[in-house]
Length: 188
Image 1 (tube, helix red, strand yellow):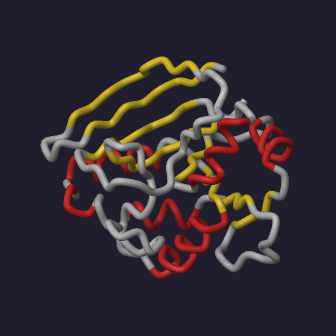
Image 2 (tube, helix red, strand yellow):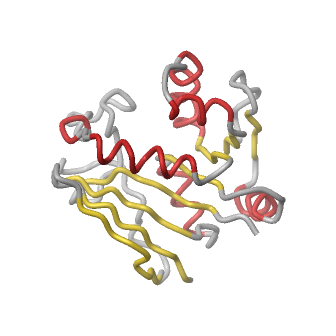
């Protein structure tokens, strides 16, 4: 069975919104950029190389589809452009980015996707989708890159109404720039 692996850039106060800066009009967008490092770049490329498909929410998909098809000069771009991309949306009518497929029903379609042949599936960002995946117990592994910054508010992946979720620490890494990467297995 394929695993769903969620990877998030997250602040100390739990915000995942606008790490790159222009995803939303968040007043502190771009909080992740000041902590760029070769170490975290290697971590992210290794994470991408270890899977063979992506699962994205509509907003993340749209942002990625506007940017990544025009990038061809590095391994990250090569992998992200070649992999199948499953986008969860009830309103998206069609996809333009190669190997992109629309999923309408989170609970049924993603559970079925996990049963198909292939490697693990990586979810980038996509806070609304991640909340739904957590609710339906469809996430197998959660990877958090915790940045030493607080932004005071914004989108979070954990809501107050979640059931008890148990996490087992799989691994941890600390980078010279103060970022901590935590990898958890999830048990419901």
